[in-house]
Length: 472
Image 1 (cartoon, rainbow, N blue to C red):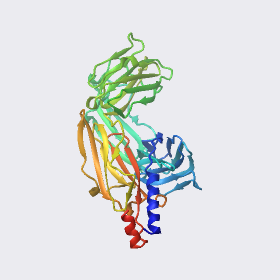
Image 2 (cartoon, helix red, strand yellow):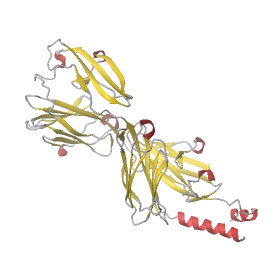
Image 3 (tube, one colour):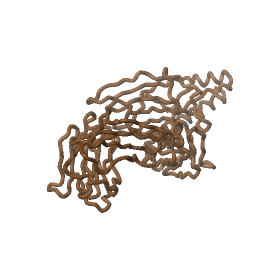
Image 4 (cartoon, rainbow, N blue to C red):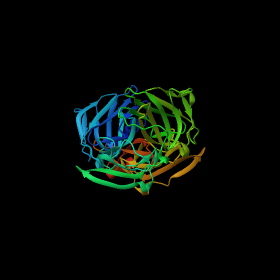
């Protein structure tokens, strides 16, 4: 073997030593990415981490696996911006050895929505990488809630009630639904829907018309309309794991009035009631899928917090309402709702098996991505350098049951080639990602990322040197 051949072999040994060291210390402690962002406002992204005594090498931000921002503390300048459609960076960034916070503005619904990821890498010798993602939906939200027009304060029996509900402009358009005493109004009561454009946004109204009847009376109490009562915060999770309990908290401001009652509903069925003047002051109504933790009930004249356990995917999912009513003389009622999806989530993110730290050009890479059990089953997707892997690289998904839950794996197999090398700062490596998503659920994707180092043959050397290296 001549001098060049020894040089190439020596370089390979150094690369293998540097990149086969794996350190488990790096932790991503908090990822602040909004699920929903208004196009009229800016969006703050903050990636918080603990390097556990190591030195930070880089922090990178991606949108749908396209890098748009990089922080490398050892470089001058230490930040870089890469143009990506729909991404407009506010230059006043805040990055250090513990977090990297950036701000985006000029958001667009079509181009700024997507999967945002933060990737943190420690410095030599480990070059440990951790990545976490969250999906963002950008929309132009209504500036205020729906308004009622044409409604009188009182009606005689058999009077015809006709009213319009109007939403302020938004994109996409809102969906207006009429309810009578919290039951959806019959379709033949809805007489017309109007949609019109305001500065490119969609405003709309929906009218209801029906004859007043005793069947629509809730009780024998006169109803007054007072604008004082306010629901200040409604804490209902969009997604909850069956293994955990679910906290519901309804917070309100009586604006000087006395509280009459707080009621919790699932769908249109009441399952909990708090009336402070009564003894006992709480009541529970049995309902399929609802199991109240009695000892944690906490209700007063400012909020009503309850806890549910023994959740079931089929029977505990649904629309949850909090209804607050003021005492006499107004008996003002305010109600707000949130849809809840119950699922059994994977206890940990996807894992890779069969992956080496380094490959020669031309080697066949074959790896399995394995996900712990869940219900419903997740969808596994492979990415190479943030581009979805070609279909012919990806094997069939294997699914098996573990205690009634769906565990699964999906393999990838392809020959390593220079075309999979990274950008100019990572010329000897490619990144492999396996992403787990839950279909039609408000769950954030789980991602496992591995940086793989590729040893390229030096085709500028003589054929003899090339043979010496490949026969090593």
